[in-house]
Length: 509
Image (cartoon, rainbow, N blue to C red; front, side):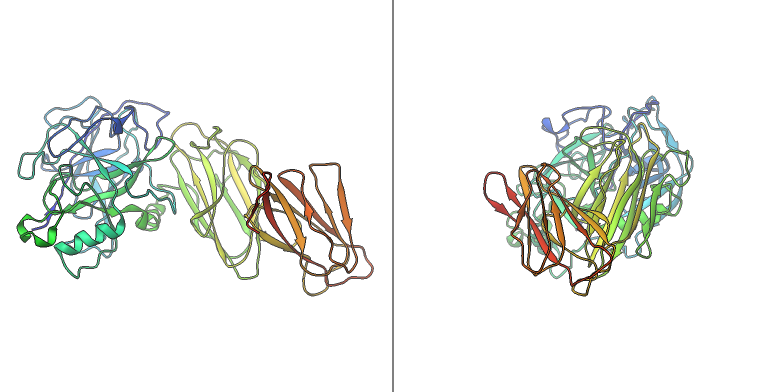
């Protein structure tokens, strides 16, 4: 029989305006040897995002705080909610109680085992007051991955042995993420032929550490480099508690085990966002797919305001084949920190290739993205200070002042290979990575192609019908400028660029 895990979790609340998602008052959670099966008590404040779900006052499941009125849990869990709880036998200082207003199950969820699409959102009546011991958890960024063997943590008030009692005080367990292929292989030994699409696994092959009944709905937490904790999974189910799954195939069915099985949150980011977007829970302005190839993306919506705390906004722009989209930052004022770990704006190509992350008060340089790609603009704020926000103008561009940040690419004159227009002025700014310079070479004959290295007093101007020699920058930045007068025009030029290490080896050629 597959054991369905259910969960209970606690924390308290004190007013604390500088709370950030995924941050705890307790340091070094992974430095201790922690187990739920076998029992290791968590430190107070180590899981400030955990909520105890209860029926008639009895613990049933857990959930994680996303916003001040939305919780993330497993689809098989729903009840009243208690935030700020630590000890189930006591009313903790700052404990808050709420009733569930709305339950949003995933549309494909079915009560079958193994469970798939085991994810739900709970809307509570009222608002959670954040503090030292109550904070929201972080969601993963689009495309963010945590590799196998990453040491992650689950907390809960579940059973301390497979058939034992629930714990009255919060317990913790460290679990390593498994390779997805290993996860699917083990689950096939429990239910041969069962298709597994929406889960990930964590645990040790020889058992001994696991979540158990009473822990369902709570998050599987993995650490980011900045120290914040990310809800990578939602505790869903497992075969037994802390059992080994080594040699499952030769064991009787009743003695087989499994790792902890968690709903993969990354697969459901769009679903979470689309549901919470309806009442602006994660974003105070309109976001989502942006129609057309020109417009403005901004937050806040009106001048003179500030963006909200604890926001996550996502905009998606589609770039057609052969088209270029230019992003220009016409306003920019976000909370400043050296690593951009607090409020920040990130630009991705195709949802997983990060072009840049920006914060502070200086507008980033323009960004030009080439055709057949999607552009994702993500804005994240914590729950500390805010700024005046940002405004990004985007439009199709073939000529103008554009910045090229991709590792290699090409530039060409307007309308190429057709004749360019008279009275044209185009500029391209190329940024090389640290420790590299830019090399540009033309591949076809041209007429009138000025090129200038801004970082030195030297410049080179070329025109005519012969192919000029390659051009090297003397630093990380090169400016290419193309200008025409009002007389004769020609086909123009096509040039490629790539980067060369200052140590001598070429890159991306």
